[in-house]
Each structure stands twice: as C-alpha cells, then as structure tokens.
Image (cartoon, rainbow over all chains, first blue to last red; front, side, top):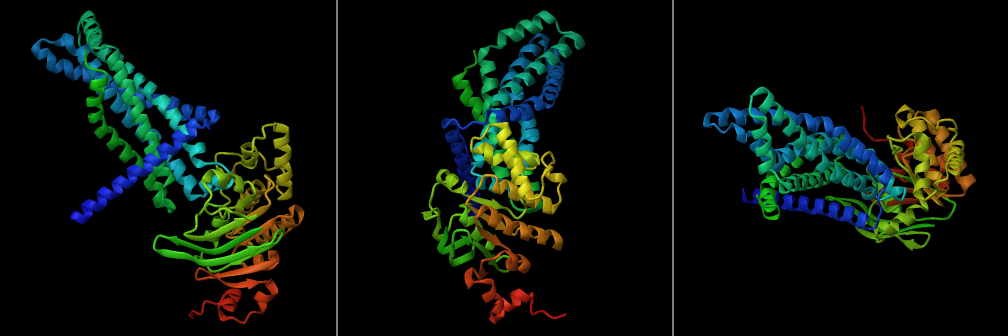
Length: 259
Length: 245
C-alpha cells in the first residue's frame, strides 16, 4: 500500500516535471523569437474561433438557468433584485472561466492530443526532427500562443453571453425589474471581476495546451496509445482546472480583492 | 563519411545494441541486414541523432554527433536525409508542400525556385505531376517515392533508408531498388539501407552488415555474404526458420 502510494506520488511528480520541461522549451523558443506566425493564426482560427459556438452556448444556457434558479430561491426572501448581481459575480469569478475551460479542454485538448499522438506514431514528429525542425517550435509554440490569446477571449464571450441570457430570463421571463437587475449587476461587478475572469482563462489555456501537447507528444504506439492520448488529455485538463480553480480563487482574491 | 564505434543502446530493460562498430565510406551504399527486432532501425536513428546512445560514438563526416545538443544536431541533419519506414509524410500537406517543406525551413521563399526544386525531385523519383495530391490519396509505393523526394530535395550528402521496400509488392519493390541505386549514382550520396529484404540487399549493396543479437555478426561484400557457410547467415539468406509443420 505504501509502495503503491509512493510510486503514484513519484510518477505524478515526474509527470509535472516533464510538463514543466515542455513549458520551459516553449518559453525558450518564444524568447529566441522562433514563432511561426502563419501556423499561429491557423491555430487561433482552429482552436479559438471554432470554439466560440460551444463556449457561447454553454455560457448562455448556464446564465439562463442560473438566473432562473437564483430567482426561485431569492423570490421566497423577496430578494429578486439581487439576481443580476449574483449571476454576474458568479459567472465572472467562477462559472464562466471554469465552464469555458472544461468545454475547451474537451474540444481543443482532445484535438491537440489526437493530432500530435497520430503524428508521433506515424513517425511524422521524427520526420520533423530529421528535417532539421524542432517539434516544440513547430507544433507546441503556435498552439500555446494561440490558446493563451484565445482562452481569455472565449471566457469573456462565455460570461458575456451568460449575462445577456440571465438578463433575458430574469427580466423578460421572470419579471424582475430591469432597472434593479442592471443597477445591482453594475454595483457589484467591477474591473477586478473582469481581471479575475480573464486571468483564470489565461491560466486554464496554459494548462489545456501544455497537458494536451504533452499527452500527444508522448502517445504510445498503436491504436490504443493514440486513443488513450486524447482521453488522458481531457481527463487531466478537466481535473486540473477544477482543482486549480479552488486555489486560484484564493490567490486572485489577494491580487484582485472583492470591492 | 559515417563511423560508429562501440555503440550500445538500452531501451527499457532491453539491450538493443551491444557494441556495434561500423564504417561507411563516402559514396558507398551499405545495407544493414538482420532479423526483425535486432536493432537495425535503432542503429539507423542513431546516425541522424534521433536516438542518443547509452554508450559509444557516432561520427558524421568526422564530427562526433552523439553528444551534440539538439540545436547543433539540426545542422547535422541538413547533411543527412532519412526515408522513414512509413514515409512519414505530413498528412495535412499536399505532395508539393511536403517536398518543399525542408527547402522552406532552409529559408528558401521564392515560389519559382521552390516549384522548380520540387519538380526536379519528383522527376528523380518518377512522380512528376503528383504535386497537388494529398498523401492519403497515394499508394504505399508512391508514398515512399514522395518521402524519398522530400529527403533528396535538400541535397543531403548521405541518405538513410529505413525498410524502404517493406509492405510493397515485388514490382514496386524492384522499382524502389532501382531508384535507390539510380539516386546513389546520380547524386553520389553515401547511403545506409536498413532492410530484411534480400533482393534489396543484393541489388543495392556495395557492402553488407549483418546485425545479430545487437552486434555486427558479419561485415563484407555481397559476394562474401552469399558465399558464407555460417548457419545464422545462411538461414537468413534462404529464409529458413528451422520450424516444422
């Protein structure tokens, strides 16, 4: 039992170290200015632009149902006017970044791991090296920049759509006073909440891209290996996002305190 | 041109190479033979720095490459081209983009020059006109030819072939064998061909190395290989497993 726990802890530490090495290599490539802008734009279109539907639909319906549930509970206490502020603060600080992160991990993380995993087992990554190209520079750097830029914007879209949907459901369907809804929302939401959401989006983007690239680049031979890479990527990204979000909230509360 | 000294490679718990010594002269084609899993491809990947040895040294044009950092190795790899067993074409690119890839990486941007060099490489492998095709639309033999065109387009001084005829029909195999020989004459490159196909070995080899249990078991000419009465070599040449029905 102790041996099993020790081995699990050791393999987890090795895993973290290897992902950190990948991040270091990416950072070094960035510092050397080895960025392939064309590939980066392609990845922004692929990972950022094409993730908008998933993220906005998630944000809109979460905002809508959250507004409805908050209304159902708060109306018993006569606090309907607080629905806007609760939806707004929750979506900015927690739900928006986490939900966008989970959706992007599912869509983009799986795609990255599957693509790089297939390249690995079909010797395309060895071919890159044999042709004098560093795989990290060619494959990881453009994806890393693309997702680090896209993710905060996707979070912003997710939160934005959730607020619109929450407002629609709250004021047009459930009859909350529009003035109270908006005023309270504005009163309790400020620049710190926006910074909070964008910061989390950026961090989650970093996690998704590096964990997924690592899983793809280290895929094992055969159909099972390639199949396992995206599964592992999505599971690890999702769990990391959920766990890290807890600690990140405490850290961000120091950086961007609640006013 | 290529020299390997006391090369050892441990992969996990398995000692794949156990002290390989090898020398290939400039302009020569050396065929490396051996049973599946005997370490032929592992040896080949050491020659281009895709693997680092557990022990031993690898010299390319007199430069020891086994301890070079990855960035220095990239320069060595511009001198040495490799045809992979699966051809390893980039499946998101057309044939033309695949072949132009190493040229673009060398900084050639002029589209006319790129088109000419791609066309010239495709002509050498008898595939002119296939520029716009995607790898998924190509047969196994065509993929190998495109892979070879991508390898030679950068004008390497040495070409490494990893199982160039595996999985191909006898006619295509013969055509690839002729192509290897023709390229060697036309480009005067040094070649190392890893195979277990005896027809490829007899057709292409100036010298033969036979790997057995991670070591060089035989080194010599094709004639010497054929004349050998060593049972391990004779069984391999004749394809005798020793099993009965």
